[in-house]
Image (cartoon, rainbow, N blue to C red; front, side):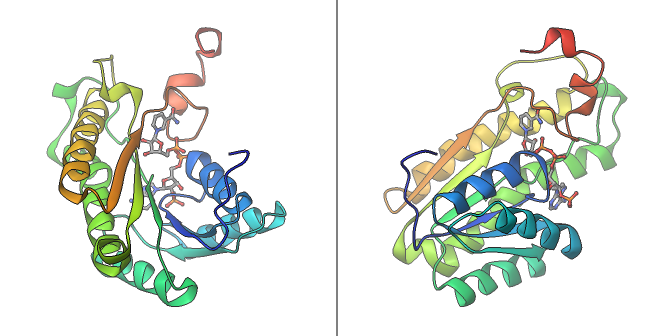
Length: 209
Ligand SMILES: NC(=O)c1ccc[n+]([C@@H]2O[C@H](COP(=O)([O-])OP(=O)(O)OC[C@H]3O[C@@H](n4cnc5c(N)ncnc54)[C@H](OP(=O)(O)O)[C@@H]3O)[C@@H](O)[C@H]2O)c1
């Protein structure tokens, strides 16, 4: 994010205890933003915030334990952010899950529900809370972490990809509904060597860029 100055801005990054979310949080804080990092576990969120601070960033990093679809925890996190930093300019809906590896018809309702709950309802819930608490009046930017898999079918991660395809559509829908005050965008990463994507890269290094 060279050249980007976010001094005085505040961001929440969900699912920031490791992987893509932690890297995004570190970059936002390096650009000067105050950043709230979430994880399901408070200690993991605290450890991630400490890692961001240790990187010598300009912004302040704060860890908050909040499951992506626990409405009370999400509301507490958004309220705490506005209370602590006075504003909420950026929301990165990054928390994601893939408990349903394999063909779609081999999945059960529990894995389907968890996948769509975390990957699709989570962004709706957090965006709604951010709009209510700050962005609806003052404006802001929402970024949803989708996936390249949401744009084309692929073996073994069909249900996850369907949730990301839905997230891409949801992003367009919310962009329409919240314009012009709130910008809503999605990013669609390819394979990144993180825990979530382990099945895609661990024994296939030769096929990855
Ligand atoms: N890696 C890839 O190749 C790839 C490609 C495209 C898109 N993505 C997307 O990128 C995002 C980040 O994934 P990653 O690859 O960085 O995976 P990761 O390293 O496994 O990180 C996942 C993060 O999400 C958090 N999380 C998981 N379930 C959660 C829940 N129910 N509530 C709150 N936080 C939750 C985890 O925190 P705790 O475990 O500490 O709670 C962790 O911080 C996801 O949306 C994923 O779908 C990844």
